[in-house]
Amino acid sequence: MRELLDRVALVTGAARGIGRATALALADSGAAVVVSDVAIPVAGLDYTTGDAAGLDETARLIAGSGGRAAPVPADVRDIAALRDAAATAVTRFGRLDILVANAGIASWPRTTWQATEEEWQTMLDVTLTGTWNTCRAAIPAILEGGRGGSVVIVSSTAALKPLATIGHYSAAKAGLVGLAKSLALELAPERIRVNTVHPGGTATDMTQNEAAETWQATAPGVGVTLELPLPIHRLEPLDIANAIRWLCTDEARYITGTVSVVDGGALLR
Ligand code: NAD
Image 1: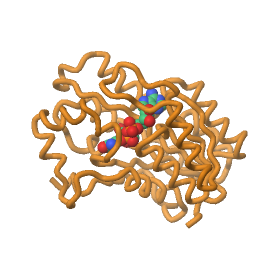
Image 2: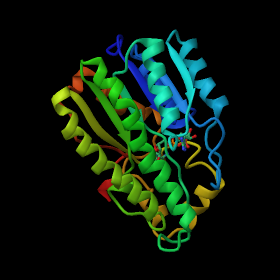
Image 3: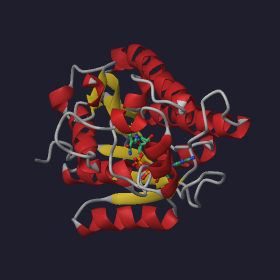
């Protein structure tokens, strides 16, 4: 299906994982995609984030399938770099219709109240303020296009259900719901829709690394919470990408301000 044939998208955190799968899905539906991520891995974390090589690989995969992509390195803590990414959508592809604010990080303090100030602040800076930065960089270009648009913010089931020790992540991801709903109200008159998508445990480098696996095995109650009602261990990035892609199509034209959970039933327990 080529429902997004004349659309242009910007996807952050697109060097790998859910962001890459989303960029590929949007391109597969016909959209031209500006893919963005950090050029060098984010410092101070217990796992390695994406980088410029991963970003180039995403663009190469899209081009290899006959799609159109432009990689633009940008740390979401850097508003000027994000504005360059939005400007690239307009200069390279003529407009901007879709924003997927997906970039995010994980860290695993001993408890929420014992998190270091650096753990707390880096989480808030990237996940919450970084998403606000992404929105304020991209929305002017979507407005300029004059034909509405779709903003999808990637939150988490952790915004809706507590997990021990990662209250900083839950707080940041819950903040995204408030951000998205205010934006949805403000932008509705312009037919720009804003929704959050909340993945459950998904097989990416964020969850499949030594620090994450230690946390899953040892933090109180976490192992049980991550056991899914559906008979799977984890979702795949494409499962999340499919939901995001659909929210960007005209089939979802009257869906705005919503919270979409894609979690294998995790929130049922
Ligand atoms: P991932 O680590 O593979 O991808 C996240 C991407 O964001 C990486 O490429 C990383 O480089 C990028 N990023 C991190 N900090 C950035 C910054 N400052 N500026 C620009 N880019 C930055 O992990 P993923 O699982 O694909 O995560 C994608 C989103 O989904 C994240 O927001 C994450 O919180 C969310 N999420 C993931 C899961 C899961 O189980 N994997 C569950 C719920 C929510």
